[in-house]
Image (cartoon, rainbow, N blue to C red; front, side, top):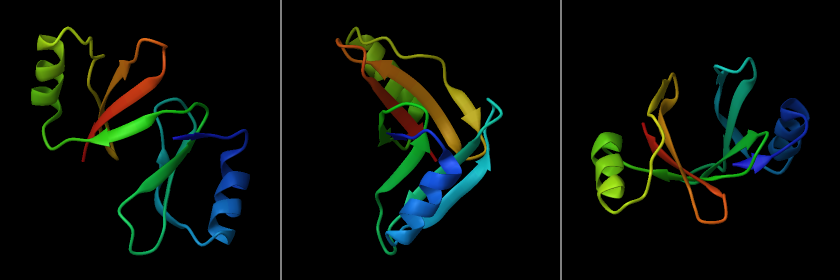
Length: 101
């Protein structure tokens, strides 16, 4: 996730760089979730109000339990139209996001 001030202007910038819109949908906070990808690539960037690393997982419940067993607190799982998400903070407060498609 890349922090941007204006998601639509940032989207235009990344389109000009050769990215494509992978997902554009309303999010639960009244904003628009914009996820960009390079053609034929698997890595995406999300244009957001904050930074984070998003890690894909095939089973978010199992991954959350595995991390909790190691003493790593995982936030509640949020269901959205573009996936299921749970958040973890590292020791310095940086966000790591688990995502299940």
